Length: 381
Image (cartoon, rainbow, N blue to C red):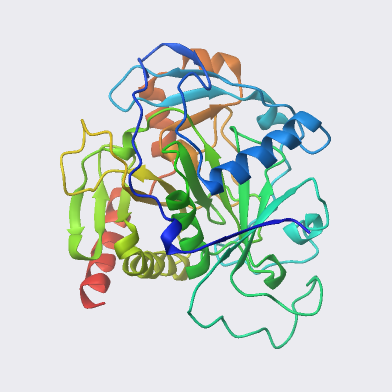
């Protein structure tokens, strides 16, 4: 049996402090140069299990013992890393034709590794008084065992890691859900960040058509020991009473902010927005990180009491050829650039990065129409 983490709202951490990072543009650094805060129970379970498997061998496709890292000169402070082997050795992405493509049990899915003690780190279960979701009346293809235990999230190692602690959160894997965000998946992402005492722990999601490689519901989690501009960048209010803002300085998108006291309300609004994107077949990426409240000048504060949730609607990339330098997915949009080729890592400029990213964002007119619809929907919510 895998380890199990049972948690409740009382385990969420708010007094999280961002240690000072050098992050000087152009400076090449080694990962792990700053002292991390004392680990929470969540961090301890994740990092110990992940490190044990990395040291033991036989689980990951390649070793990851620190990545060469530099901060690109420029206002956006992109964090560039050289990770050649991930670009070469990661699993070939599945063929995707729609954001709403159904789950296909004949394709690779995470149920195939649930019996592998090496890949399963632990299971997360939230202690709650809420009623469980209704059981499935007909077990889906590939379901393991007789029943489905509600609200259980399996945490797997990502065998092709992009950074330390890279894991996958798979909500209720035996329900065989496609790669479409559900309320449980969204809450898992937000709550995982709140369970961590490390401001460098990040969570993200790639929809189908936005470089998701497996059509089985999952989110990514990993540690990046560098400050991202997303943590503090000013935003523009859209429906601030619902926690809905516009990102402008970074790639244009939307931002939500949640602390434990308003987690339920923000999660409901976020789900409505992502559901709208799915219904309109709009690909999207989500990135969650510790950050500052969006309605304050937070450029010089080091407190990270809540979670900033960035959402980028994008042009769909069905069958698109991957970029040679980096894919434009959840971490790249947030300012973390895992490069596949050493020359690109060493030479690419902020302007060149911006030009690549811009090709994948919604056209201005389409973004404006979408924003107007979302604002109207949320005002009426």
